[in-house]
Image 1: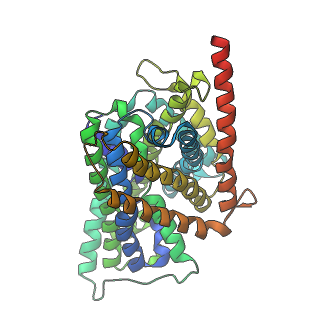
Image 2 (image 1 turned 90 degrees about the vertical axis):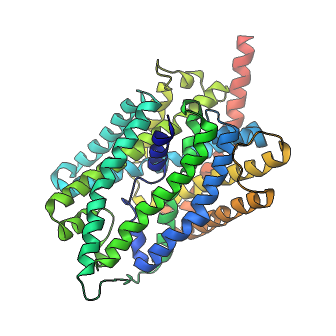
Image 3 (image 1 turned 45 degrees about the horizontal axis):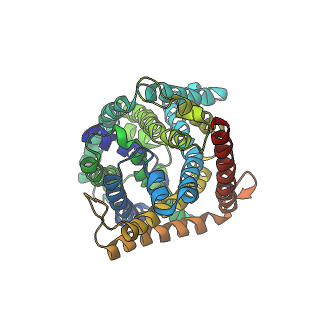
Length: 432
């Protein structure tokens, strides 16, 4: 992948456009815009700087797993991979759900009852087939999907600013006043700004990774921020009521401001963004079990590749696991995803600091500032992750608090490491 496809794939691994940010508006336009402008500085930029340094210094397939393993040893490398794969089970279930939600806005009968589940499974199957064509096909496809999904929003934003200019009082900063709306808004925004490290796992399939990774991270961070802030600012300018915006309601606003044709285009864009995000993330996550298998920490069959270099067994195994998480609700998926992903992200920041200390002479084409700056870069996201875990303490999944369930899932990592190490030793003994 060259720079532009890498940027497009990263965009989908993180964002996919304004779709899914409507729940942030529970806190009102003003607070939502402040959150969306603050989090890139406190959450996205530090993460992008860390990834820019580590991906350019160690452009290896497996990405963050390789970084943590090199800095902290095989045990913590395994925990990094486990936390990321566990988080992916809950993260990846969100996108087929959003696909069905938007499709239902256009054709309600198509998604009623078991039809919704059938569509979700179809999304998973389609992305598996797409990924089997190779990383370049995913990256180039992401460029096309990026253009298609944002084109209706260009029209909507233009219409909103035109509409607002003719209103006597056009700014609407009303808030819903619901309890916990600010915390929910922050959690949803964090989820919409996370996933920058996912692009690192396909380093061997990126053209000039030492040069292109830092550039892709920073440019993608800017694109993601603009794709959130500009549409919401346009809605406030046009006087669109906060209460009329909920998950999947961009199409209703488009119908009101422009007409049915734009509403249909927004719905189609919503399905495309869900497809694009699932597709790009499948490419990323499937490389983790493949690299673990190559390190003899998982069954060797997971390392099998097709003629395009795609780990096809790992792709299918991941897809099966993701399908099992489809029944969970959107908010519950976000909470558990943030807890598990946050733990893995903290390990990556620790790896950044440890490698600075242990390998000061390691070639770093891009640096996240001085050593003190690197420490600050890691501290701020870590505090946000702790906040997200605290806020999620009362949410439940599978009859357990989300925080407790996340801790139990994380605690399985050391046990699985011991099992994997034992199996690896037995396999080596047999082969000898």
